[in-house]
Length: 114
Length: 113
Image 1 (tube, each protein chain N blue to C red):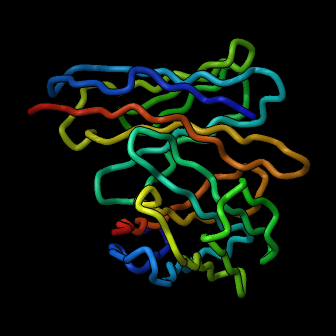
Image 2 (image 1 turned 90 degrees about the horizontal axis):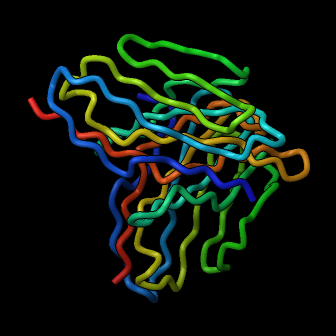
């Protein structure tokens, strides 16, 4: 069974601070790494789906990197804003047979104070 | 709006009740999922349907019974639940069941009393 770990569990930053958090996953049989953003009372929404070692993706002030050989991904937020407050989830498909169902980490809860 | 709609948003039920959760997706996806979110735990996969056939059941108790009548609709039938089943139940869909991007509903907050 795939084990996806995220750290830290929670993070409190001031508006304008830049921050980052980590997702680690088994590097063997890697297929993809997903990042989701989950705001309170809303649905989790995909930020990035990454597949290639060394991949770096960016969406506005948020970016992510991927190292499949060592089994980790970083999510960076530059100049955090209060609206960035959310839980950030990473997930990786766990292949059993022909199915690749997403296995999620516990998430990093980010709070940005004005 | 993610294209995945769940009803009801909140549900309180007694341990002897029977209720159903509904999920509908308008994305043309072929796979649908039920996840459970309990406090301080990661999202736990309960059921996977691909092309309306159940392909995975992660050892979920039989008091949870899924139904997928077509590729756009997914139900979770609940009966004789326990208080520890209180949680947020999320439905999701994806293009296929091979680890592609998931689109989630807003969830049903279930309380069993």
